[in-house]
Image (cartoon, rainbow, N blue to C red; front, side):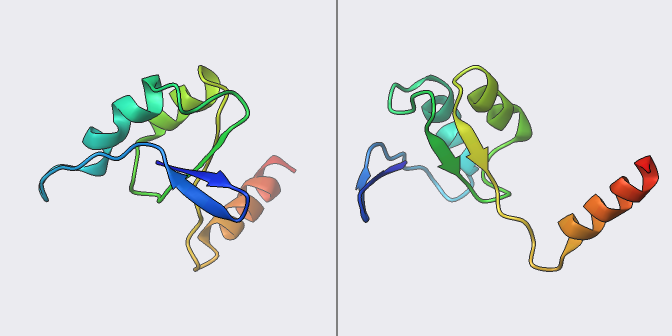
Length: 88
């Protein structure tokens, strides 16, 4: 985890593992229980980095905003338009 301080950052916690270990196994405890995340903080992560369950826990129980980038191929936009037309 890296904290932002002005225009720079500070490494707040790091986990090391073997290649077969998934990032989620290494980071779950860090995201769910550690004091470094406080209400109002934000976590920006890779889509494949953590599970939806962990992100919901971080967001609801810890009051930390979570963000995952969308794909470049406009799939999220097209899905939003499809859902909007469906409900209209």
